[in-house]
Length: 479
Image (cartoon, one colour):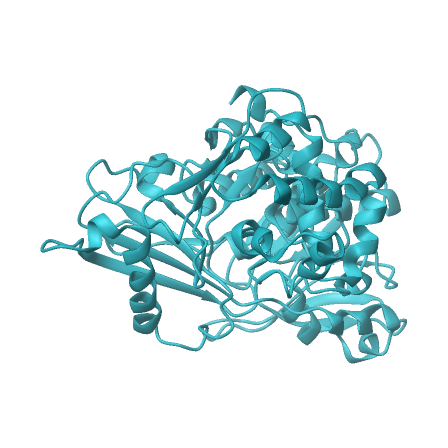
């Protein structure tokens, strides 16, 4: 069966990959001239890459890890030491670590918290452990029920004091959702904590060895095309054409550079666009349906990603760092963490500015200047004195609408992959799946969509799809 997919981000590409495994023929249509969607990357005139975001891979990403294994590219992940590293704003230039020992879960994560002496007192550790107990014992059902509270409200209900929030979870919330604890649904953090506590290497972090476009997305495209599928760039969706019964008749693709518009027809259709452009593209008759009306409860959160090249090495740390800055979320020296970006003499910092709602409309110059002011606090030895570090160049990548804004109550608005339209499906991390707005969520949503289509339109002699619902254990242990 032929399946037309609008969007070549991770959700659309993973959906197409698993459709080919099931014997279908996907055609992926991407509006831009670059693969990846929210993980897209570009090369500048100097040959340096800059990306849409700072993309860290976790051991608790079983669907992503399984897909990389199936593609034969799992060795492209560079696994880091099993630790979480936080800056200490009150002690400029110093770091606090949660080193996770190689013992079974959840004792490894518990041990990392108990051994940390910089950020939490014993009373705070005990209070937080007691508060987290219901999430561990009652599982995902309890986690979903807590969507009615912000994470700050949930912490307060557990009797956890403000310092735990400011010391640990402001950084964690901004890293996972790009918003602060008083805005984010407690379901988000509790889901992540559950994964970290239940999987031995769940909190272990890896970086890709190069740009996501070349090292992750391109191999998926090769896999699809080698099996008869197609991926087209510069193919923007102009309109979803309907039959008289309200089902999809075709995708109208806007012709570029004077070319005529083109109609793409298929047996089934998938939107793998982000939720905001999908809402714009919905046909008018569908907007009256309750299923699609609920999408109005979802919107993307603004995100800003910065790349700063310096004339010297600022740090030798080969890991993701939580900045604990009021302006910045997480950062990494990509000249240390990424093989393709390696430079023994100079640093290239990649940083996420969050929350970004007050900055998204500002100029690149203003954003870079504010970031440099924060870096003076993070790297006091390199920005003070008579010979401060010099910024050689920068790139600022703005995404006005990124992953869905995970505020309390959003779970009820997240749609299933199967819609009321018989031949139309959804894929994207905003759809309902357990990994929320993330790369893992995007890949899992694509898998679930492929599974739903394959169940509705089975192909004789198709390959086994059990991996869609039962991914194997993470391979982060041996990395």
